[in-house]
Image (tube, rainbow, N blue to C red; front, side):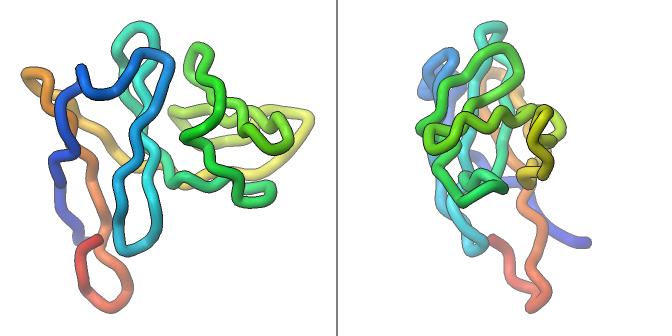
Length: 112
């Protein structure tokens, strides 16, 4: 599926163990920064009941949804047991401090 890379800002604009939100045609995207400066991007909806993952607590490579404490692996999007589900992740690239995410084109052929 075709898509494009978009620049979302500087890594320093994302707090360590925190998130920033960017909008796309398919919904808000949460950009997370781990304590080791690794950056992750997931759509800002918990697979359980749509809670805002960007408002969750980040620990290691996971975020805990603020609504019902579901834990999501930020690398894969997988919900960690005993719950089941998956949040949509996006590819991330960081070069010289600039964070970019890859947005796949929608079925109608427009970029997000």
